[in-house]
Amino acid sequence: MIEYVTAGESHGAGLVAIVTGLPAGLRIDRAFLDAMLARRQAGYGRSERQKLERDRAVTLSGVRKGMATGNPITLRVRNRARTLSKLPAVTRPRPGHADLAGVLKFGHGADARDVLERSSARETAVRTAVGGLCALLLRELGVTVTGHVVRLGPVRFAAGPLDRAARDASPFHSLDPKGDAKAKRAVDAAARDGDTLGGVIEVVATGVPPGLGSNAQAAMRLDARLGASLLGIPAIKGVEIGLGFGAAARRGSQVHDRIREGRDGRIVRPTNRAGGIEGGMTNGEPVVVRAAMKPLSTLRRALESVDLERGGRKDAHFERSDVTAVPAAAIVCEASVAIVLAQALAEKLGGDSLAEMRRNYEGYVAQLAPRWTAV
Ligand SMILES: Cc1cc2nc3c(=O)[nH]c(=O)nc-3n(C[C@H](O)[C@H](O)[C@H](O)COP(=O)(O)O)c2cc1C
Image (cartoon, rainbow, N blue to C red):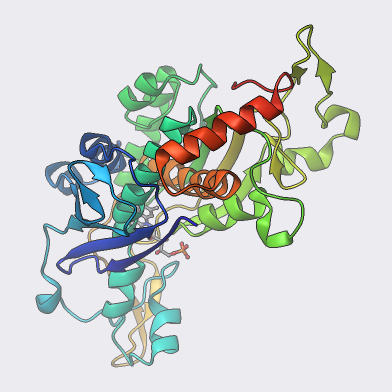
């Protein structure tokens, strides 16, 4: 079983993750992980600090001579701003953040600092590195996962070909350069008003064999697991698989993907409205999921709140914040989907080494033939 846990605060020494279950013999490509972390920090609408502070993932255990040993892997991403002991109390909880619920829950009285430090999306840096490890495993088995932004506040991006280089070149991690110009204007307008913007991210996974996840138990359904992983990202408030909410308004004949047999016996689906998942399992088509991100909660033009220390009405605490982090969240969503797919693939194939997993994968592909070949 591939599992992970993270620890660390936004302004503490750094973030760590312990990842278990990755196979021995997996090459740990540090440049691949760092490129993913750099993408998470990129994007229009983020502060200059993000661009100055390049995150790096180092491994403290479980890797020798660049290869996973099969032992638990400890990842560490250092914080540049290690100022936690000097930071002020947070006595005016920010609406839309964990501040108020957290002080009530943990009995922190009038100071939400400890809550803020852990619920900050800084944690997603190390989560993205975990996703990077999982993406390395998926890459070995021919699976590619790509997150891109399809909506930024009021701007919808046109659907371009799924080209990772084009996505990386876009300041919004979109596939629509014309849309990028409109989105810049929307972000600038929000910034002028001291406001923030949300958006929608799509993640597509190609090369996914059928049969990941299971119809047998609710908790094994792949759609349930993808939903939990994506909703586990701060500020993600909705998840759709395939047509998602759009399916509700259509007739069944306009929703379900017909099944055809190709000349070679291969199963052909003329459409993929199901987003590659039927009955809680992958069906051999690309997996397509979307996540809705709410606008960032910390507003320069702060919202009404209360002073927990002195009582009475006060504007919410303001701590450095961006106008939008949807482009960054696209990478976190990509990482979160990679984690779930790697977990489901490892569960399907078993194996303690990459060589054993690969043999099992080849055996499974032979079993699937001629019905499925990677798409
Ligand atoms: C990549 C990423 C970056 C974020 N950056 C900020 C930020 O700069 N300011 C902010 O107020 N919220 C930011 N958030 C969102 C908050 O972390 C989140 O809204 C908050 O923790 C409350 O969680 P909830 O929205 O899931 O209830 C970010 C989220 C992500 C995924």
